[in-house]
Image 1: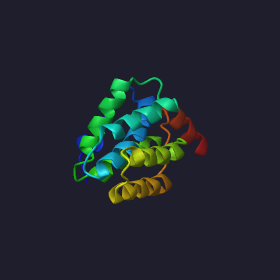
Image 2 (image 1 turned 90 degrees about the vertical axis):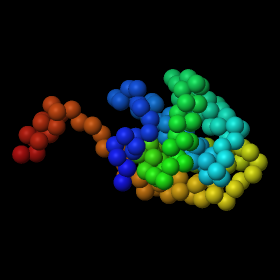
Image 3 (image 1 turned 135 degrees about the horizontal axis):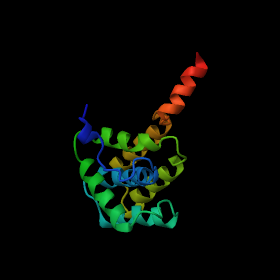
Image 4 (image 1 turned 45 degrees about the vertical axis):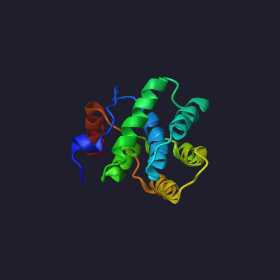
Length: 154
């Protein structure tokens, strides 16, 4: 198991907002495929940003921030605990309808350098599996709401 510092590879600037977490989830799908063949091509990195931009999936996040997230995640995915990085990045947004986008993005990144490596195919299969079985995020309930719910259940 990784410690708390390593399991959360990205500093979320607004913890109450899913915007940056959703962008990180999209970026990690592309980064996972990009590093799978042990060489990240600039065209793969550009494809991630183009995909996010073309579909207007993170209009509130600058290209520079997306590039920084990509670079940080790509570096973390080269570590032995890469699976924890992927899971920890996807888990907070697992209840959002991102699975189709994650899969489309991963396939486009694999094809971006015109050489689909077998390890990239494995990365896509891993993402598909994770999108199917990752536990859904639990909504955060305020203390007042939790107290009312506990009283109502009694």
